[in-house]
Length: 309
View 1 (cartoon, one colour):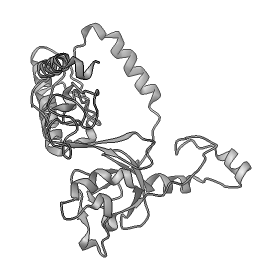
View 2: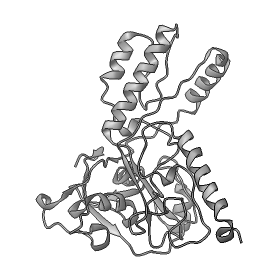
View 3: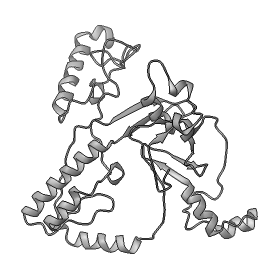
């Protein structure tokens, strides 16, 4: 495993999943690897957090692109994390015959490891204070705000997410979503199209909003954007109207609400938003949401003696 960006090999020998809660306190709070309270740690605990030790810990920590963190525990890329962090991959790998989420998985060799789709592990290699640079850029942008314009674009995604009930998560559901490379590529293509439109309209520069991407001021910059091979980690998309998280249907085993939005097993609890769609409709769902909400409302009013009595 490359320690900079780990490949999507998960579970098996690739990840140790921890399920037992352990009480711990961090009386020094949270701090960056490049600015720890070294003096206090030395005086209070007799521990010297040397730069070498801090760098080792920093480069041993990993970030999951699906949400969550972990750490390397071997030179071969074995990663330790919590069960709920690996839950998304466990669900994707499970089959009707093998429930990895419930029963777990063990590989006796690297050859037996299961490949986890859409997973990327990131390692923080360095920290740089860019406060002055960012502050100056913000001031410059604000000074030119009357000359700025923005545009948004939508992609009907093929990526998938899940809503899970995780033991020990204080009763809150765990929502996971992994942007895949196909959808990331389509988003970048949309950004390139929008950038081309702005340049043709006379823009001096276009800021694409991709991590590590320079402002685009020419056709050459556009081509570099298109050929950049940007992955999901370079994007910070926002989801509107998530669909299918409370999908409707008659079968209570595979759906959350009935065809009128009433929660299975509950008398007076209705859901009337995009979450009841069986899947993504592929277009802006505002009209569909309003139509379904109206249908649900009429259903309730027509049966007022049952629901409103």
